[in-house]
Amino acid sequence: MTRIQKPSLSKAYAILPSECAIIIVAWNCWEHLYRCLDALAAQTAPGFRVVIIDNGDAEDQQIERAGGYPNVSYVKSPSNLGFAAGNNRGMELVKGACWIILLNPDTLPAVDWFEKMIEAAVSYPDFAVFGSKLLQAASPTVLDGEGDCYHVSGMAWRSGMGLLAGSKPNEPWEVFSPCAAAALYKVDALRRVGGFDEDFFCYMEDVDLGFRLRLAGFRCMSVPDAEVLHVGSATTGKRSPFYVYYGQRNLVWTYVKNMPGVLFWLFLPLHVALNIAGVLRYALSGQFQVVWHAKYDAIHALPKIWKKRREIQKTRRASLTEILKVLDKRPVPGLGRAMNSLWK
Image 1 (cartoon, rainbow, N blue to C red):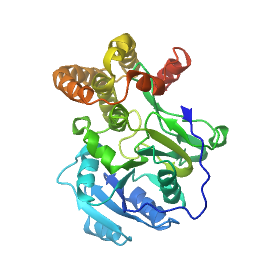
Image 2: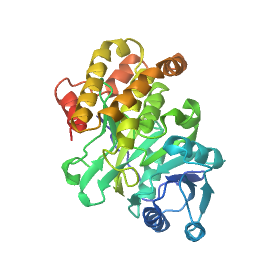
Image 3: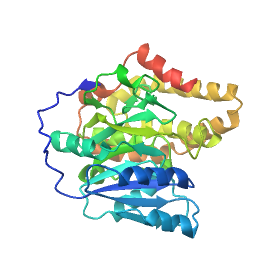
Image 4: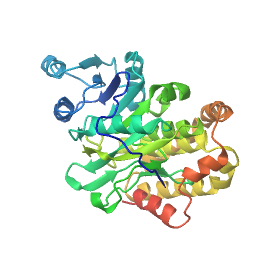
C-alpha cells in the first residue's frame, strides 16, 4: 500500500457539485437495514439520496417503514439478483449522479462518514474510488478491513482485518481496491468498465470490479477517518456452502479475467497451488462436494471467461509495472497472510 500525503484543507471544503447516490442491496435483513437507514438519517453532511434494491421478500409494513426515511427510494427486484446484478440495477436508476456509494445493509456508518468520504473525493481528484475504514460491529476497536489486498496468486483479503483499529496510522493511502460494503465510486469510472460482472452473483465481485478499474487506469484510496461498523455475512453466513461455492468459483474467474499479460503466466503456478489448497481446506472441513462443484463450474466456464479477458485486456490502460506495484508480491508474508485467511 502506498501512503498518500494529505493536502491542506479548510473545514469549509467544497461539497461535490452533483448529487451522490447510495445504493443498498438487501436480502431479508430488515432489522439491519433499519439501523443502517437510521445511521444515514443522522449524517452531518447532506447531499445524497438512497436507493434500496430488495432482493428478498418484504411485507407491506416493512416497505412502508423503509419509505418513511428521508430521500429513500425502494425498488423490489423480480427475483434474487445477487449483489452484482442488484447494484447494477441500482446504478441504472440513479440518473444524474456523478458519484455512487455502495453500502451493505449490515453497516452502521459513523455520523460524519459521508462528510469524510466527500471530503476525500474533493481533496484527491486523481482518485476515482474510495474505501471506508470497516470496524467489526461486535468489537468496534477491531478492524474489519481498510481496503482489499490482492496477492499475485489470486487470493484477496481485507487489509488490517483483525488488528486493533489504532494500530495503523490514521492517514489515507492507496490500496488495490475497496471493500464494496462501504465504498465511493466515480460514475464515469464504473461506466468505463461496465459495472459489476453479473455472472459472479456475489463474493469477489467487488475485487473483480476493483481489478478492472485498476486495469483501466483508475486508482483507489482508503479513507481511514470514514468509519463504518460492519456485521459481515449477516445473511449468507461465514463458511456456509453458499459462501464456499461462490467465493471459490469466483476466485478463479477474477484471476483469469484480470491478471494482465505475462503476469498471468508468471503467477499461474501460484494460482493453481492456491486452488488446490482451497479444495483441501474445505474437503477437510466436510465441504468437499461444495468446493469441487465450485471449481468444476469455474473451469467449465473458462471459454466464456477467457472471452471476457480478451475484451478487458484489449482496453487496458495501466502498464504491467503499474499493476505489479499494487499487487501483494511478498512470497512469504503476503502468501502466508492469504493462506491464513483460507484456513481460518
